[in-house]
Length: 411
Image (cartoon, rainbow, N blue to C red; front, top):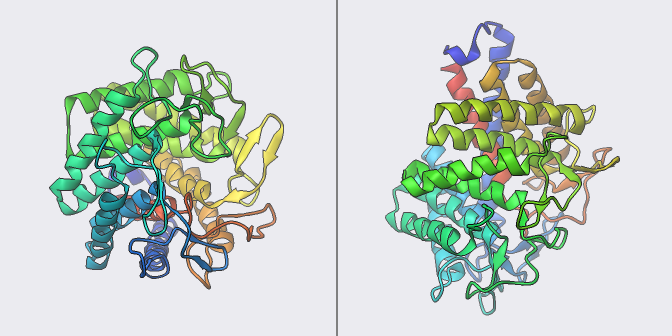
């Protein structure tokens, strides 16, 4: 048993970790089986753009690049973690479809969406989408050694640096047109503010840059990761509340008041991961302190009595729905916090979140996880199982991360 477990010799705790690993391994297999069967578009290729709460398939739904990059990431990561050939087969298919139909062969970069049969294209270029392209392509390279995917990922990195980067104030703008011209409406989704910069986009640039650095330790890339970590520490985290601010002007003036508990705890471990990847000891120490603060404030302000995370808070108003992805990210954030300071309370909270997920979010009959449930645990049946934003990435990543981290703790 290594030093991360510290003085933990309680046989019950070790047994719990082993049980968690087994349960999460089983759920990962069940989850990816859904995406390998139910989500396939047998007629038009690739993956179906939408499946509703009840499992009804909308074969005419448009297909989004975020969904497709996240599918590629999920199967690539699963293949890297397990070595199972069926996951490589799915990753190969997802890679081919992504490059053939979403890559802009004239200007470069990934377009936002295509029709079910690729006959029409929404050509806008979201920074967020280019980031997920890097994340997926670098993971595919990491898992399979595919050189073509690494070259596409490098192209996307240079596109972000040369087209989207704010050289005056730092950071990256939200969106551009196909030909890299400005857009009036830069929103990532209808629920977002039309702001030139957002926390969400920057978090999902930091995440892929760190993953790309694993397979391409480039000096300019490392500098960009350092700059992003600094932006989170000095511009995005609110010094008064300790939470992430969500939307910003070009000069980083804050345009929002809401708190996203899921992003706080997701950002905690992603910042720590990025710091570990670049390997600067002083930055690692600073980020670890920040990560613990973000996790602790999430537990203090965003946790319901049943151990689940509320969705958001704006002022005194709580959105008390429990969405699938904050629960998944909470498990990784809590495990990461435990690995930093070995406080067993984080493992206790993790177990509570997992119990909530099993009891309320996993659709045991039809597969995948519900999008969300209300405060009483009733699923919102108007939300999709598969869609532009409902993908296998948050939950498969949490399961893979937890299995790998538990293995390290127990070995």
